[in-house]
Image 1 (cartoon, rainbow, N blue to C red):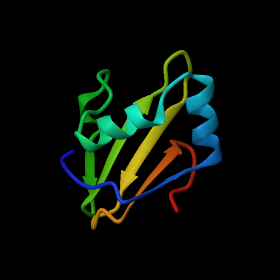
Image 2 (cartoon, rainbow, N blue to C red):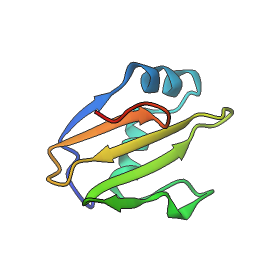
Image 3 (cartoon, rainbow, N blue to C red):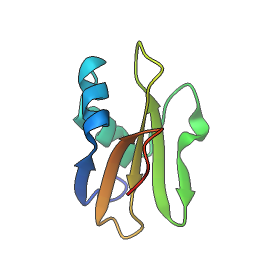
Length: 86
């Protein structure tokens, strides 16, 4: 891991989307922690206000999971792209 993830919170919608697309949360978190973004778009790793943000299209769907880690690495949030952060 390039950074700590801290406390991990997953929205209900993101958890459902991961489950129905047979995508494992731990795989997504591992890729995020290594700075490995979606292969379709290598520019999806963003640092905004020192937050680390990655996006992963879910297979067989039009859904995209966003993973956001706070600047101090105290918390990581997993949500769908249309959900409000925090």
